[in-house]
Amino acid sequence: MSDLERPDIQALSEPPLGRPRLKRLRLALILFGLSLLALVSTAFGMMMAVASDLPELENRQEFRRAQNSLLTDVHNKYLATLADQGRIIIPADHIAPVMQHAIIAIEDRRFYQNDGVDLRGISRALWQDVTSGRAVQGGSTITQQFVKNATQAQNRRTVLEKVREAALAYHLTHKWSKRKILTEYLNSIYFGNGAYGIESAARTYFGQTDEHVGCGKPTQRCAKELQPHEAALLAGMVASPTGYEPIANPVAAKRRRDVVLTKMFEQGYLTRGELARSIAQRLPTRDVIDPPRTQAATRSAGYFATWVRSQVIERYGARRALEGGLRVQTTLDLGLQRTADLAVQKYLGNPRWGPHAALVAIDNDSGEVRAMVGGTDYSQVPFNLATQGQRQPGSAFKPFVLATALRRGISPSSTWTSKKMVFDIPGSIEKFTVNNYEGNYSGVSTLARATTLSDNSVFAQVGIKAGTKRIARTAERMGIRTPVSTNYANTLGGLRRGVTPLDLAHAYETFATGGVLVSGSLGARERGPVGIRKV
Image: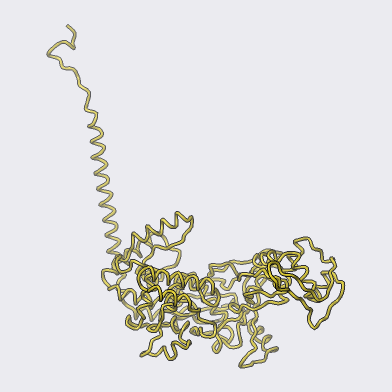
């Protein structure tokens, strides 16, 4: 009898197949539970830790005692003070409901439903960013944005800092009312042109219009009188006060305003008729925009200081830029600035009412702005002709025509006939007629000689042959940031929008560097001349 057949010896059985799997599953569940407990504990600890910041947010007096930031020139001499001179704190009942609706519609449509952090909004924003292949929508709530402003956080923050902001926003939502959060937010955000807070913004952009005569008094707040199209413009500017500024970027500003109005309609804040009437309204014009003044060392230095201020705010946020005690070394040379002022006064004198002039001096090697005259007296006329005045360049545009012609193989020694010219405009019954100044023509002339004489007749022929689209592309590649029209008149500097003296000086710098575009500012998102050396 074999051992297997013996009744006193039992065969060894195989262990059940499911037992090891069960053990692994139990281990996984235990580890998951411990990890979840650790995560919850960490989150709870973080939530409790950030709660200590709440008293700071509630202490608005502490905010108002913050230190002003200072600008110095390139030699560390005092240039200007950056402060929130324009901010006026107002209560909720002094802010038009339509303004509150506008900011909610564009910035946080679920403001009244979320707990300070909108997971649904974050998911929606993430999905749009992924599907579009670029960042197109932010996921921050109004409460998170307020926390960011109040804690002086920079635009580039670590993940931990963003989590901290989210946790603090959650705490704040359960401590403050939605009405208080929205009011504090509107009192703290930057709207461009030195307007810090909603009342300052309403005064800056609309306080001088016929519809709001006399507003700005404690008993008549401008923010309380805002109409839908006005509120929508201001709400749209929050995302980019420079990019949506109605004077410097009117097309983008109107498009953004109309997006806000459309969202207000979609969310039930406007009727269809109100939407149509609001979209038909014009943007505020240059003559009614009246920004708060910047304190500067000289009457004209305020123009440069205001330009740099927008760059500092873009990089560090309005609150830190104006109240964070920053010391910003700019590129301006006060000695050269005084020389520039004298050069302008020598030819214009000091007329009370026009004409006005602008001057920009740039270091060709570094792209740093050394002097800037934006007008005769910043305290009286704060509009900066140097950075905002889009004027027809005229013959100053001809170097771009010449550069394009040379690139297309048109030789300086090529000959052209200098006489009155009449060109047919493709696709139009109109004619493009060119005359030289005072009717002076030189007959047959080389391009080189025509350049010396600034001959309109020859340059029109050369420019049209080289191609007006190519001329526009050359100018933009060399530093002109406003759209350059491609009409025949661009051959003589007749542009539909004009250019700023700052951009023209910047583009000329590209000639001086042999075709290399020198750009890159510490503050501005767009590439351009440098106004800040060190912060």
